[in-house]
Length: 279
Ligand SMILES: [Cu+2]
Image (cartoon, rainbow, N blue to C red; front, side, top):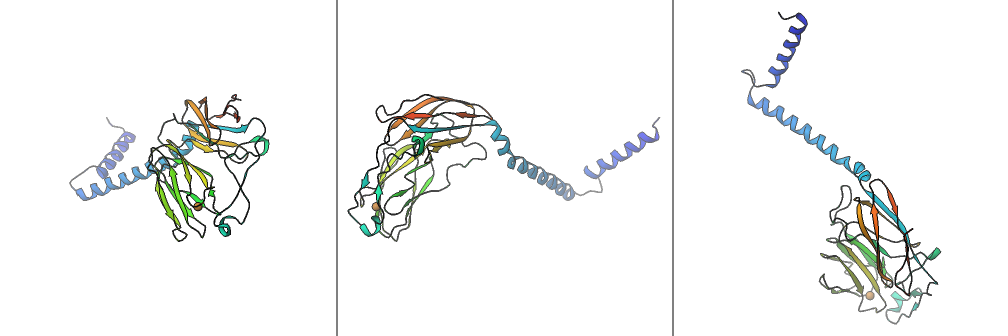
């Protein structure tokens, strides 16, 4: 025998089923509409989950911080003699930028990277495709060293009212030798292979810059004090590499752990072109 309470429960259940299952009174159009609403709800839930993934991802990855310093006395910056386009290029004294040493012997413009890390960008990090800029201003390159992931487009800007010539020295990427008159404000170039590319100008022989085309998103350029930070690195054991145009390349092992920051310092010197201890 069915008790009144149980009877009521069965009645409610049958009413719910009648509303959602096809019955003689319901047309298929209604059913399809309800299915559509359910699908939309599922899709927005999926969107919400995906939008909130980067926060979780930060806990699944680690960071590397450190400083690149020069051992020994830093050399004095050499002044450049401006011989052409003096009105545009010679308004302020110019010095060589190949080895900039700041306070506490920190080295600027050293590129720290992890060539053997996975090439895919983690969730929440910029994938290749976003443009980066190198400006020609006062007949020098800004920045002096530009690092970016392979597949990225470089916008070479001419902010000077004079002719520059973008000359790249590369083996894996197609070498460029492009005149850029003052009216051609932007040249766009895509780099398809990881490589360190020297950039010079045939009009102004002192102009020198570098493109560091990284194979993955795990790189950083040291600041004026030599500091760097690489975030969002998948946990693992890697070789951490530092490159500087005068001092060359050295690397040392690093272990990255999820949710942790690993400290790695590089001490380099002009005599041995890189020797140092992990701290
Ligand atoms: Cu130039």
